[in-house]
Image 1: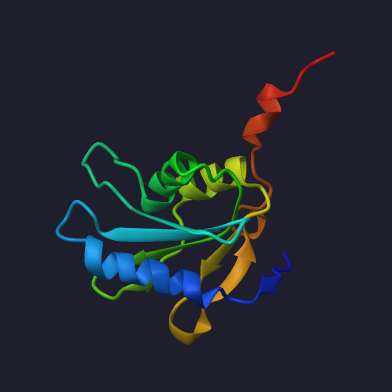
Image 2: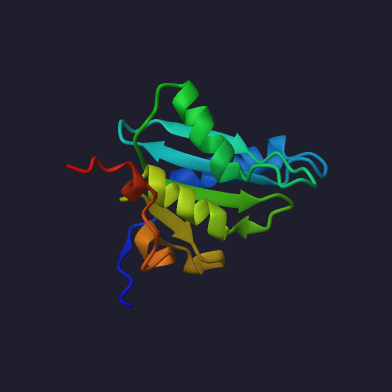
Length: 137
């Protein structure tokens, strides 16, 4: 597998970092996410931890974006609280991001080695959820 990288959107990383530092208080909110909309706007969100498997920050972000009328996201990043830095999306988030935004780029890596990759590079040979929605003629 060849992974192609794109320039890192440092403004997006900083937005997620700022939210993680200021809004992630206690055990219920430990991750922040930020995404850049196709029109350039930045949308942010935090996770809602719950022992039953509450939604990750990336999933909350999809809903927050839709609530703002944003349905096309180009790039996403998640950042941990307590200055943990960029955290890659979990498997569930990778699948949901692929299903909603098949061309989205994801910022991953740590420290000065962060990079931007396509979601398909993080979830190769994946199931495509929309397959079940195709009209059969």
